[in-house]
Image (cartoon, rainbow, N blue to C red; front, side, top):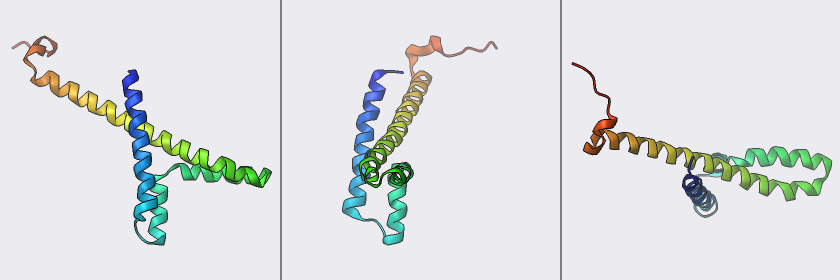
Length: 115
């Protein structure tokens, strides 16, 4: 695990979160019902924020507003961080595999079969 991969994933996650928020706020995809589906699809942290907010609302109603948004944005950011990190890892793996198959300098890395 390299540090650059996590840094790139962080930048990509922030970019994806900004794009998702701008799609929801600026573009307003679909009608009322489909916009709810877009909201939960692009911002999965809303599920966790709603659950935590409801639990805290039972204890003290003003805590709901304070805790909902950090949980909502934090879980959505972590969602996009994991997605971008996995995409970077898959890309690096595919690139490494295709490089070693076609590179003449890597002949000693390829398995040789007798025959």
